[in-house]
Amino acid sequence: MARRRWPVVTGVVLALVLSGAAVLAWPVSDPATAAAGRAVDLAETELDDAGRNHEVDACNYYSGQARGPATGCPAGWSRGPWCADFARYVWQHAGVTGAGEIDSWARSGRQYGERHGTWHPADSDYTPRPGDLVVYRDGAFEVPDGVSDHVGIVVAAHLGWFSTVEGNVTGGVTERRYVPRGMGTIEGFASPAA
Image: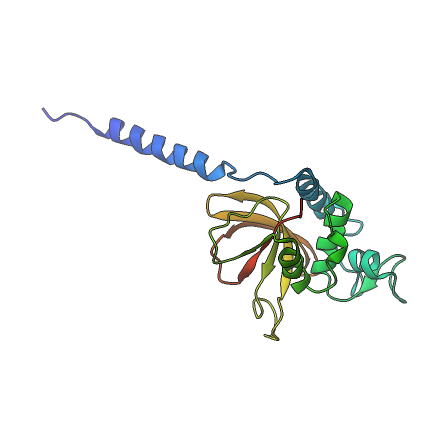
């Protein structure tokens, strides 16, 4: 009589699947500094703040905080590309050293990392950490013009993947989950200076 192996095989397969799922869900990097941890918390708070996490008539809250208010915008709001303004707002309010060096251009995220010795090119073996900036390559989201296109805040990192909160994505603050670490549009990561 043949032995029934299916219950054993099914049990082993189920155990492997469940343990694999647990490994993928387990975070492998923590914020490098207390300020980086506060940046993660603040980015997630801003994601949920329906009073200002979006555009109104091409105006946004974060540019208003970085550049001052603009005529025709709600009080304290301004116009313009604002992914870097969002990143600067989060880092400044989290107390990241030198966050005021981030300007309204995505490339300022890379420049910050290069100035502070915290720049990690995408082709390095660096694993992003919560609170880092992720800088996207020229041409990733816009017409290639020789400068970085977009920047966001890393809020979680897992084996080979990370999640972000980013400003100025489809007119609002958006969460991107499970971005592959090796995605070709990533230029690199800038960690907060200690």
